Amino acid sequence: MKITVEANVHAPIEKVWLAYTTPSDIVHWNAASDDWHTTQASVDLRPGGAFSSRMEAKDGSFGFDFAGTYTNVVPNRLIEYAFGDRQTKVEFKEKPEGVAVKIVFDAETTHSIEQQQEGWQAILDNFVRYVEAQR
Image 1 (tube, rainbow, N blue to C red):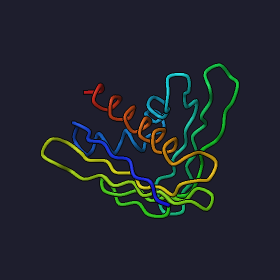
Image 2 (cartoon, rainbow, N blue to C red):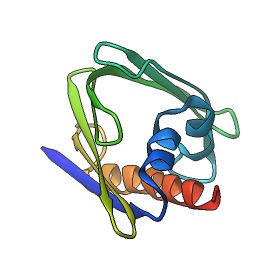
Image 3 (cartoon, helix red, strand yellow):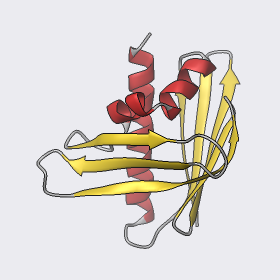
Image 4 (tube, rainbow, N blue to C red):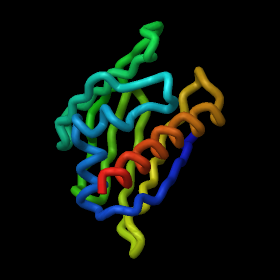
């Protein structure tokens, strides 16, 4: 099953793209709630290139690596990647008021569809707040 999350970012496409793909920015926005954070990120933004984000509970009780391989990259337009046996597509579409970001990903079986959608949407919403605050 595919899950979709979307948001609009009121910023130029170049700024949105850089914030989404730059490790020093990713660590500022990549968390679904205030009690989690990303402690490190790496990006090799090209087909076949790897990415990784270390996500940890701020109290130190749990952490995991979210990692995979880019399968398609079209600058300022599209990022596709695989992680495990799952796929994700991230689209960036310029609009007069900014950029529409749409993420479509394969669901997993551990958490409910609602939990997955809420978590990914929360991360995307953090991304929007981060980018818009950087003006």
